[in-house]
Length: 473
Ligand code: NAD
Image (tube, rainbow, N blue to C red; front, top):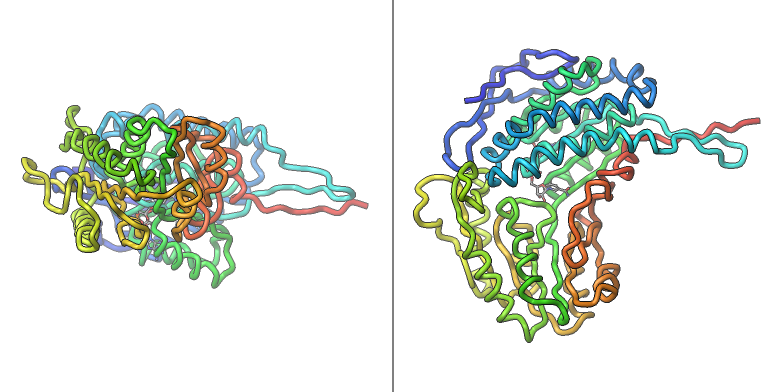
C-alpha cells in the first residue's frame, strides 16, 4: 500500500493540518491501493502563501531558466514512466500498456514540450507607440480530474511554470498518486521552493478554498460541467481569471461514402478508450439511416471482442471504471437507455461474468437512439455508445450540434474535402478527420458548456499571461 502522509508545500514535505486521510482504491481488485491526506483550507492557505512568496522571483527568472526547468521536469517524469503507468492503471482502470503510453509517457513529453514553446513565443511586440508585453499572471490554482490524472495536471502546470506563474495543484481525490511523483520530480530537478505546490483533498474543502482564495489569480479547472459551474461562480467573487475544461457528449459522423466497417471500428474504439472515461469520447455515433443496422452490428462485434480484466494483466483490453460509485452511475445510465426505448445491441446493465471483483461495466452499444434520449444527451463517462440514424448530411450536422456540449467530434468520409467541410460546421473545439490522431501541440478545449480556454501547445500558454501595454513617448 502506498501511504503519502505529507503535502508538498514551499519545496518541502509538510504535515497536513488535519489527520483525515483519503483512501485510493484499486479499480480492479477493490483493495485500498493508497492513502493520501485530505487537505484542509489551512493547508491550502499555506500552499498559496508559499506560491505567492515564490512568484516575484520566478516570474522574473530568465526565459531560458524556466524553459530548462520544464524540460528537466519532463525528463524526470520520463525516467519514471513505468511506475506512473502502473499507478494510473490501477487507480483509473486503463490497461497497463496503454496507460504507460497515454498516462505516463505523454505527460512527460507535454511537460518537456513547453521548453521550445516558451523559447519561440513572442513576449513583446510594438503596436504603434506602445510596447506590449506578456507577463506572468500570478498564482495559479490547478484543479484536475481523475481520468487522465497526470496528463491533466501537466497540461496546466507546464504552461503555468513556463509563463512564470507559480502553482498550487489539487489533484482528484480519486487518482492523486501520480501528483506525488510530479512533486518529487520538482524536488529532484531543484525547482525553487513554492513554485509548485501539491495539496491533495476533496473538492468541497481543499478545492473550494483554493478557488475562493484571495491570493490566487488564475483558476484552471478540468472536471465535470456541474463542478465547473460552481468553480466559475466562486471565482467570480474575487474576479479571478478562469479556464474550464469540462464534460462532453461528442459525436462521430460516418458519412455515406465512408468505409463503414473501418469508420465504425475506429469510432467505437475511440469511445471505449479508458473504459469510456475520456472527456473527448465519441459517445454518439451518427450513421446514415440506411446503414444503421449494419453499423450497430459492427459496433456490437467490436465491443464483444474486448477482453475485460485487471489492467495489469497483459491480456486485458478493457479495464474497470475508477470507483464503485462511478460504476453504479454508468449502470444507471444504461438502465435509462433501456427504459427510454433504445435498442440494446451489446453489453447491458448486468456485470460481466467471470469477474468476481473490480468495478467493471460491460461495454455497451445502443442502436436506434435519438437525441431526446438521456443516453444521447448526458455524459455517461463509461463504456457506452449510442448509435443514432440520420437522414442526409445537413441532418447529421444538425444532430451532432444538438447538444449543450462542444468538446470534440469525428468525421469519416471517402472524400477528404467533404469530411473537412462537415468538420468545419461542427461546433466543437477538436474535430478529428478520417481518424486524424491526437496532437499534443494543438489547442485542446471546448465550445459551449464544455468550457472555455485552451490547453496544450502555444495556445495553452495564453491562460497564464497578463498583457500589459507600455505607452512610449
Ligand atoms: P469532478 O468535477 O468531480 O472533479 C474534478 C476536480 O474538481 C477534482 O479535483 C475535484 O476534487 C474538484 N472539485 C469538485 N468540486 C469542486 C468544487 N466545488 N470546487 C473546487 N473543486 C472541486 O470531475 P471528475 O469526476 O474527477 O472527472 C470527470 C469529469 O471531468 C467528466 O465530466 C469529464 O468530461 C471531465 N473532463 C474534462 C476534460 C477536458 O479537458 N474537457 C478532461 C478530463 C475530464
